[in-house]
Structure formats: C-alpha cells, structure tokens
Image (cartoon, helix red, strand yellow):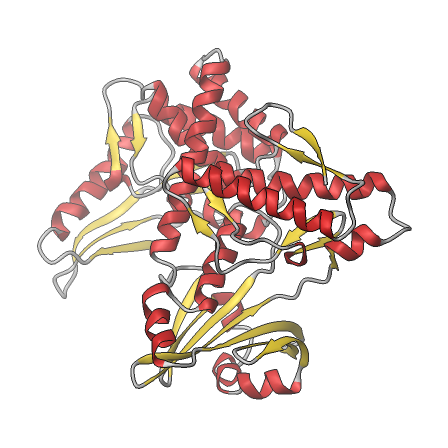
Length: 431
C-alpha cells in the first residue's frame, strides 16, 4: 500500500477529497491509475489517502535517471506517446506535468497526483497537447535523437488521428526550447534544493550538497572533514594562490576536487551575492547535464563560512579521461576527417546551447576535451542563461568568433568548422 498524507493546516481535507475523487474519475474514463483502498482522517488528525502499490512499476523520473544519455527503448516511446494521447483524447489534462507523476508498468502508463488533473468535457486542444508532448520528449529523449522523436510523434498522432505536418513540428520544436530554457532557469533559481537525487548536509560552519548515491557510498562526513588533507596528498592537476585542483582516490573511485579561497572582505560579500565559483560551476555542470552535453558530472558542493561570510568552497566531480582539443588536432596520426568531425561536433554543441539561451562565456580551446570521438566541455563559472534572445545571439557570435580566432592563432588554419547562422545547413568557415 501507498500512504499519502496531506499536511496543509486548513486545506488538507479538501486536498484528500480531491485526490480520492480524481482517482474515481480516472477510473470512470477508463484511464489506468492506482486503486484507492482507504481515505479519511488519522488518529492524530491528519488527512490521508491509501492506494494500492503496483509491483514492478517505475516512474519516468527513475527511468530517466538510470538511462543516462542512451536512447530509450522503442517500446517505451510508443507506450508513452500513445498513453499521453489517450489521456488528451479523453479530456484528461495533468497540470502538474513532471516525470514523477507517471508510472510505467509493463504495457500501461499510470497517472498519479489526480488532485492536479483537470477533467475537461472535450479533448485537449492542439496547442496544449503539443506543449505536453514536448515536455514528454524532454523527459524521455533529452539528446534529441531523431528516430526516438519520430516514434513518439507517430504514436501520439496515430491515437489522436492527426496529420502531423510542418506546423505541428514547428510548434513542438518551439515548445521544447521554451520548456528546457524554463527548466534551466528554474534550476538556477533553486540550485541547492533538496530532492530525490541530491541531499543537503549541514556541516560545521557550512553546508554541503551531494548526489544522494555518492553521499551514501561511503563516509561522506569524513570526506568533508579531510578534504584539504586529501587535496594535498593527491595528484595535483592545476593550482594557483586562490584555486587548487587535485585528483585523489576515495571509496574505490577517482575524484577531482577544486578548492576556491575567498580572500578579502569584498570577495566574501560578492560570494554571497553572486555565489561562490564552486557554486556557479555546480550550476553550470547541472545545466550541461540537463541538456545531455558531455561534461564532468558534479558529485558534491561544499561551502564553508567564517564569521557568517563565505571563506572557502569546494567542487567535487568525476574525472574526464580525455585528450585536450589542441593535442588531438596536433596529432599527425589522426586523419583530417576526424579532426573536422570533432570541430563540427563542438560548434554544433555551442549552437545547440544558444538555441536554449545559454552561452559558455570566454570559452577557450583548453576547455574542450576529446573522448571516444566526441567533444567533452568543461563547465565554466561564467556560463549565462539569457532572458533576451537578441543578447544571447550576440554573445554566442562573440564566443564563436573568439574560439575560431584562438584555434587559428594556435596553427589550425587549414581546418574548417560548421557555423549555423539560422540556416538549415551550417556553412563551412575556415579556422
């Protein structure tokens, strides 16, 4: 059984009744959903609803977390697209649309949280339907695999009996870009929110945020207490007066740690207003991961305070075992075609980020590594999520031209890159 308790001080009874009636109305419309076993008030005065627990069911959020960057199975795409279309065709609109509100059980997609569902007397309109389909694409197909998107569209259009054409495709692409931009801005506004995947830990004179699986894999409190000692004993990667990077083993895994010292009263105040460099890098890495762009996955963020002001911050990430871009381009054993492919992939990533309103700041060739014939980008603290599209395009052009000039200065003028200025096919520009 699943027990859901409503904690609102004076509306708990209303929320419980809405939840129970929502499940009943879903059953009346032939929509798969858990069965309500009991609802009412507990002995301590709290309202609750008890539903059946469906064995073997997984939420879309769990499927997305375990899938990584791989393309989902075709059967799941067809099932999700067809079931979402069936909901819309029956006038069922989930206003709180997120992956945790859908369960996948064999050949069924079950709906949760009926208290947030609107039951319409007619099928859901085309514009709203395509916006929710775009949200589903972002959940299941984060890397925009063309074949996977086509399966979702075909399964949805078949149930709704739609002729999927250019207007629907344009509306879907616009809704996907808008949804991902809003998702990144929402994550930027609440970067340290506690969730299923992350945990907040209070430490002496500070705060730590870590991936839940990473924090539970070993003595995380001991790691936080001895982070400086581990940095000094590990293999140095880079360092200067206020920034030290080292690599060391912990719990049978390699970790790269970056330490930032906030020296001076002014820098400590700026760290509170703008966020520490470690926190900005944490946010940047999470945004890149949300768009399925290869980068070092952040594991933990640690911030320490002295007299109420930030004095030191740490960022722990997974290591990236790749070759620097300049070293890869200078290798005589690498064919020219492979070099062209890597450069085109790198600039395609920058163009894709710009479509979602993101620029990487003063990007340098040293911020790009090559691993498994694909570029890997290092997160930058000066990454910006733009509100104004015109400003984003201007910053993107400046960033692109700067990177082209830096590659030309390093002696790679014989290569070409792909530049997309709003064209369907990127034009070739010599470095």
